[in-house]
Image 1 (cartoon, one colour):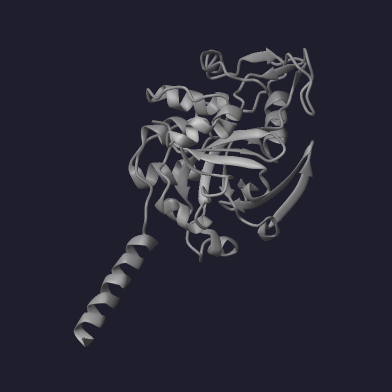
Image 2 (tube, one colour):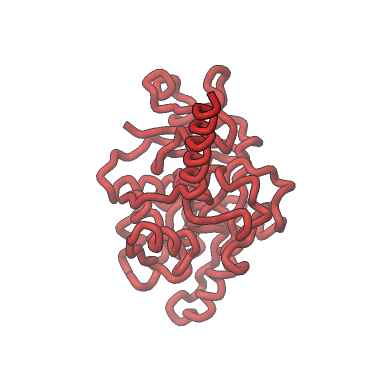
Length: 290
């Protein structure tokens, strides 16, 4: 009996070590997604180091958010510079007929990623969440309806795969792509003690509101004013967020432009990783394309 118990303890120890040293694997989805992060972003850098990939950023600043942005060909049409586009509708942040750098909106970005690897285009976000057929046909891994509840956040990693989509409505509908966990990218409790309890929480990459993009893009515009006359800055861009961490756990809180942000600073305070407040969502689904 003692030998059996010892063997079980050894197996548990080995499994614990394997979990502690989980690493992200190379994926065409991540290769595509990470090209839109800012140059030398910590997640891009660690992905390259762990997998041997050599992903480079298309834009040094990362890709800015653009309201209604869906046109991948035009986004990349003037590399290494940005193309520009007039906004066709006034929103809380954007102004009709004003010029902005052309980027993606949230679904423009995820559709572009999928297109790069030959996957079909996903549906509109309200349909993805609310159409019963997606639930009934197995596209929903979890959702807000009774009987489809998620496991605890730190267990989602055992059920999600890179490329799964989170569609949620907090104040507006938004879509993000699952990329793994902090532990997958080599983060430890010693390195990020403020995130020690959340190393296994899901991370998602998305094009959306972000506290640092506005200033970053404004600096870029100021340095290239001859090329981008009368062009306005953005309120976000492509970045990585952590899902489900309590807002009160954030080490930083700011109201920037038109939004509240709760976030952690990584990589010697160069990368802001925001919290995506899924517990506040009125509807959501984890969605897996077939």
